[in-house]
Image (cartoon, rainbow, N blue to C red):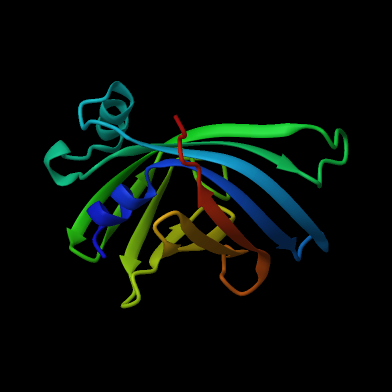
Length: 178
């Protein structure tokens, strides 16, 4: 698997069902999400802003993309019907065909920009490692078929010694019908 093939397979609209276990709060959470992944041009204004801010040479990047989501969780203590939504820009910087860096405008675990490393396992699983100020996240994404993929994550303390949260999601591509 290469980052190009992974992103080509990932683009589109997905319906996600995620179960998370927060060990810190001793809470289980079920989340239903709509996720959209759109490839962007290297000269997209948001991409250009990030490249300038992070002092990244545009010649080193490959297939920037935007990921947007809207989620409904069963763990909203103040308003159970509340939804959360957001969007981030992700910019891959390949080091070779199977590994590289990924710059994110907003992180998965903490709402700050983040630089991650990625690599592909021999079974084509995409593995993403991100170190934040307060935590370390590892995400894995693999395809079951053309329109079904799975995603797991583990969130650890910044020292890496304790597990804060684990999650598993199955995601199904939404196919447009005419």
